[in-house]
Length: 353
Image 1 (cartoon, rainbow, N blue to C red):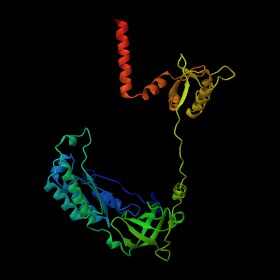
Image 2 (spheres, helix red, strand yellow; image 1 turned 180 degrees about the vertical axis):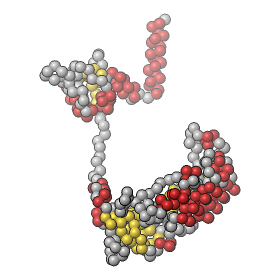
Image 3 (cartoon, rainbow, N blue to C red; image 1 turned 120 degrees about the vertical axis):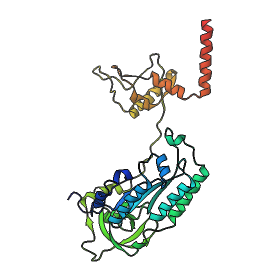
Image 4 (tube, rainbow, N blue to C red; image 1 turned 90 degrees about the vertical axis):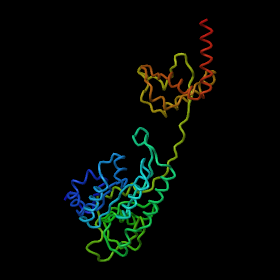
């Protein structure tokens, strides 16, 4: 009732201590026909000593208990997990336990990462595993993961998939079955996007399946179309690339008061529009600079983005003294600023004595 066809719900990620007390209820949820039989449960390491150093509130046995329960009670359950290679203090024996865990379950999705010390964390202060060893462990785990296949049993299988996106190649459509297996399909996106279709799998890769849509009398109507996806079709159309011109720097006449007139006061004596956009203000600045060129007045660079941050006075003036100083010193290098400061200090010393 709540999730009409062909809408599907995917439960995201959870950690073992959050699910272990509710795993039976979670099994019932994942078996619902409108919920993908998929769950992401990071284990990070199979050694309890490493998990304790990570301050993880579970053991490897508890993780296995959750996985075993899900696999036993949810048909065609897909479980994804994460592994961190080379956490500080991880020994070769600890890492071998992680390899044994992957060999045991052969997870179809394993996100492999190398330990990186985030500043300010307790792990950043621990004695690190040598970088060469961390890379070796990462390669060993990657080799193990790529050595097995988990979806070869899908070959020639007929199943229903929900098509929801376009593949990176720009031509294939991407759908997922109840187990959240990714299926690539060659079909017209305007016709099949957002549709639940029956497909036959003709190719099984490590990370994907390829299927063809069946248009014959397979089950009932092979296409269950949802009107909720119609408004997404417009977003899928290619949009022209807009090249934005660089934001120009403009200049202004240097005045003793450090003010600049933007626009002109209204005929009624009120202030000029203070809500003028920075681009319009920049155009006014550029025109005022060209008119002031004949008078030989000095100019200072002003970035138009600084206009929107200033206060407007009642007579239509915008105070630009601070942005001008910041823009001026922003163009100087450190050595020039130090020389300038030294000259100022020498002058002050001369004047004071």
